[in-house]
Length: 381
Image (cartoon, rainbow, N blue to C red; front, top):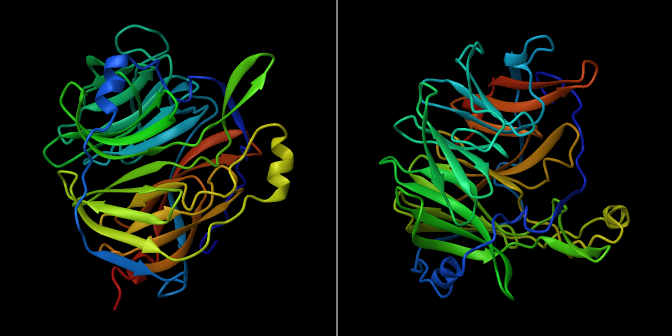
């Protein structure tokens, strides 16, 4: 990679979890009845059809490291398993550590400020830990268990616990602070589902926007049903853009741009056939079933200029870099781009990612200056 050499990171091939843990809580019948045949947003909107090849070919970020957080000998700077990052309006950095069950907070220069939460089952404590999002007011929302979301104020003090009837996979807010979530649950006969919804302040579903199957695999081992996450699941992904949201079903190459109320504004399509999963991966999976084809994309990003990045390689299967398709704010396919494989944030000329220093066995949060940021086109010319 231009401008710096990426250190090797780990490769995750297959994660196996007990049935129900991946999908979330046992769902109440009342919740399911509300989900059945719920009206969804459907309107005629403009469609941008893109060819298989980008308008301006390939692009590679030229990266200059400007910040590295992670130390071996200081508990406040040690990470064991980073599963999410966020940066607030003041530049404070929030690092979610799943294994340590905490969220560490640093100032914009990487100095430790505070820790949110700890392992436990009480208010402000975590059985699991995943940073979900930060509201415009500065409240921090963290998934703390199968049916709970813990809320902290920006000074780090505990605010409240929200009980939910679903697994909340992603949380975004519009400029007025209205929450939107990507939820996951199980319906009898239909199996696992993901749904993008507008929520009320108590996190009850107010409006359904999109719903689709989520293709987790199951197999029987010793008489027990095992739920398997192979990394090749098809389902909904969401992202936040400056003027609203975007959502796509990875089983097809279609991305919808939504306004701040969740209404569809534009449909983006890209030509190209689905990719088969390599035979070597099928062989390594053994009895674990894999889908016929890979997802068209694995993760979404958006920058402050409204460009959309759809990662087309599983970030857990790549040692150093990953590939993403970059679309303009009006839906045109601009670039195929290379970037660090565990990128979490691309914003205002900076990139935030996670790396492993294998020599020291040290997990690091890195911020890079994108030196050639200004040379990237914003729209088709």
